[in-house]
Image 1 (cartoon, one colour):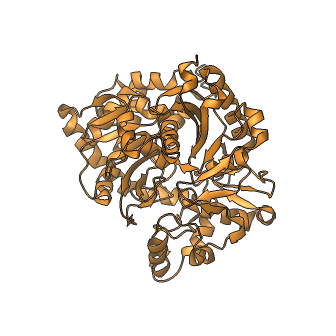
Image 2 (spheres, one colour; image 1 turned 90 degrees about the horizontal axis):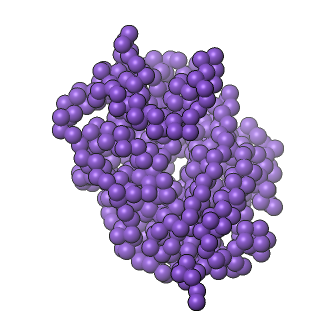
Image 3 (cartoon, rainbow, N blue to C red; image 1 turned 180 degrees about the vertical axis):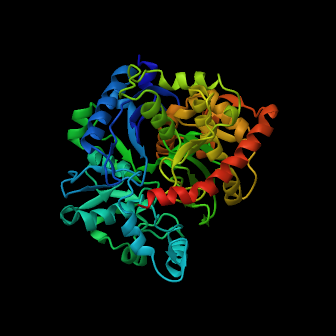
Length: 529
């Protein structure tokens, strides 16, 4: 008699984030049978670069795959598909054999800024863009190249101009999910969803499988260096025999076309219906919600993208500053390995931060934290903004500063709320809270108190993307319906706003916004040098 686990069907889901990959085995009910994750290095370079090692990506992914298969006890024959989701605006050039030609360029990498600026400059100028160029980019792609140069177009242009030898040898440019899918299947392909940050596809229509001539001309990237496009809901094909042998998977295991993590996180939070936002508290924070129409808000640097769900658009508002800011504060200032060495970075660093924050009162006795370590994107792009503490005094403690970090990050989310609701088209009554940051009860409650609406926390927020892309794979294989997904997602707690804290957070938020505007010239003067 077959074991129950062998009778079930599973999807092997791979989620590639800034901190490293996560792999999970997910069944048709959205339950995670086993999961594993690994850390990878992010190298910051003196010229504004930020890179990953693609070999470390692959080695950690394969190690995690073997671990989840071993620990789950699931028979390889029960694993019917592999699905990959990942961060995006992350660029890797490969040769015709699929071998990386350099390190992966991170979404934090701004070395493409001068090249993007050259593409869009001209007169009359609005916010750094030639007006006619700006309007055409918005009309066709949905948004223009970022002035920070952190999109895939900026990365490709950096390689073309600063690393011409690599550009010449490049067979294809890949986003992470498409690179891993190529390693699994041997196929060099992508979709309209995954090549979004290359800004080469006409997004006025969905399920496009050709690049746009005007966008290709403006971007200046050779068409043959871009992967061919498959349908958004496509199946890439089976894994290769060598991969099946290497990973211990059944021959013929299929791989679905890749998905960007904005799409998988919305699905993984059950945000399938229109205008139901998921607030993803990951390394980078963003709101994601499905809508039916293409929209753009240039002033707030927000737009819609082709969703991984066929025939739908996905609203996205990207903060770029969230968990990575908390991580930098704790590792660089609190537990730094320097002359003030406090004994190393503890494994319970985030739990300690949450508990310490409780020792300071709401509002941190006036200490204000500005969280823009990586500039700002939504709801207002400015590559020169930075972070800092304001209003420190002799009595300021690390408890005040730590609570102020949580509060400042939450105020950044509050800043995003208004423009997001305008884009989505209606007031939002609550957010679905997910991502690793949601594991903190303290931070989740501060989010509710600062933003002023309930936060419905997903029961397993760390596996949000894993679950989302796995359920999408089951749907593409015809095994579940999209409308069934919301009922599969579990929420463990609702954090209600505390009315007694409303006045203090309204006052703090007013000063947060005033500080942003008043300190901007100082940041520009310091960071444009």
